[in-house]
Image 1: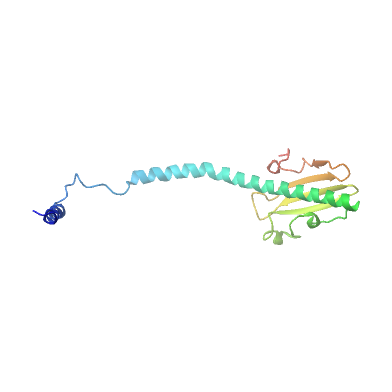
Image 2: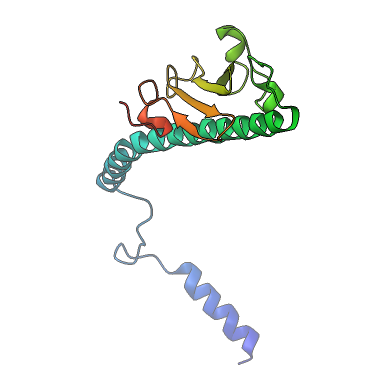
Amino acid sequence: MTSTTFQNQLLRQLTSKKTNSKNIIQKGFTLVELMVVIVIVGILSAVALPNFLSQSAKAKGAEANSMISVILKNAQADYHTKGTLTASADCTDWGAPSKTSSDADAKTATKFGYTCAVSGSTLTATATGNPSDTTISGKTIVKTLDLQTGLITEATDSTSKLFGGTAS
């Protein structure tokens, strides 16, 4: 008997053999298994989603803190160079992104509106959350820079904890 004959007989034997119900391999998942997976995913999402949204808001708050720092540092450098500081209401002279003057424009612009006010040798910079973003809407951070000493103070009465302040 040659090897090809043997292979042919083996193939015929394997293909003609009826499968026994005990040898059938189960494929797929039962309804109970699928329901358990759905419940687990539901529980995980119920726990993770609020935490994710909180982290997202904190990241946006970090962005505001960072931009306020840039504005204050640039303004102080400008003050030391010129000896005086001219008010830039939208802070764009000191590195703030071009922002808007109305809530309608804010929906398509950056996450925060930045405003600056100069009074004597102090500069007050304010970041206000975009009204169209519910996680930061109404949240503000206000920092004041003493241009002569370089001391930065934070207005904790109007600053939310989200942005690193101490007020609630």
